[in-house]
Length: 336
Image 1: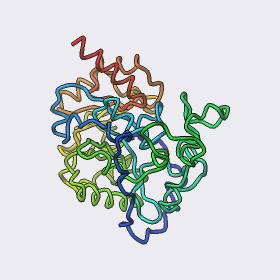
Image 2 (image 1 turned 180 degrees about the vertical axis):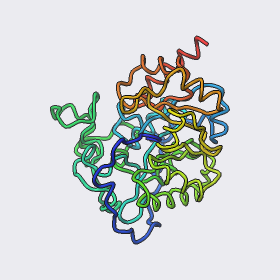
Image 3 (image 1 turned 90 degrees about the vertical axis):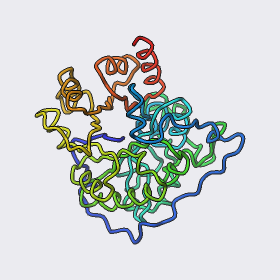
Image 4 (image 1 turned 45 degrees about the vertical axis):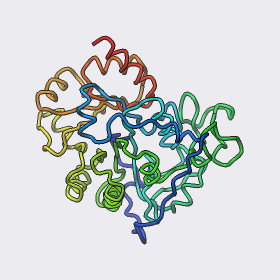
């Protein structure tokens, strides 16, 4: 999600892709809202600018990759369900297709979640959008070693089983970032640009274009694993809130080097590559420096872990199980 730092690049991330012929491909159209559409149940956001979100004076809950342990990874079904459940913000990853459409997808390829394995930056939007993005999702994992009946939403995308009430087959597809903007006007979006410079810079350009077109610059937080991408995006969209990349975050967590004023929302895991990051000493230093810290557990997520992170001083939970995180936050606030 918003700062899901990969420790090593995959092979495909190191390959320079063929430049897309255009970055203005029409992505999707808004799904009409009917009386039975779950889109009609999406509440108004608790805050519609990042400044307002930070001004809530309480920790927040984000739905990491649409809450990928409760819903199919990075799906409209997941984003809508998480919003209805009461999260404060949505977290997502973006990357470009071969024809220049910015899509919401974490991995370089589609094999971990979908019924075909395509390299996103080598495929068209229509090709990746046609896939069943819930193919490998179960109630306990996104994995390939379960019996067929464990894959609870498999076939909804292809029409082989009915969509749940209020949803459509498209809600189980790999979607465009533009559809997220259309479906969630006013909502805070925590966005990670995948891949690295220089390949990721075209995606950064398209993200800035869409955020500008949809008047969403003040409700976005943008980051990347690669600080070069973070710095580039800050140059082209200087008013957007930023999270430092891996180098700047490490420099603060391990060396106390405070990030620049424009990158004050840190997103860290409890432990990274065997090093405990989110410690009482870290929390004390971050608060003394005026930094905000959102924690993405990146595994082992539970009500108990969320409660522990809140007790330690997390300003936000970027949760794969958002309903459990909301419950932990409610209980924490009730005690305070």
